[in-house]
Length: 88
Image (cartoon, rainbow, N blue to C red; front, side):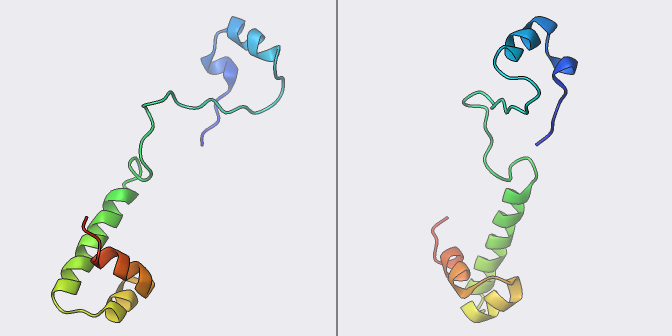
């Protein structure tokens, strides 16, 4: 989370109004509803995990065992099972 100095982005009148409620504190202003992105969308992590899971499914279909996949991808056997038996 990035912090921005209020005086750099807000009009002075609005700062004075906010100061009626809070002074010298850090406040969080959430994004409007509907503008939220899913986890990992901006960083690309979601895409990387999807690609990794596709490789795991491919390796499983080509004969690698659950235990081998867990060792190869540094995941628990339960995590591998969730990936290979999911319908996604």
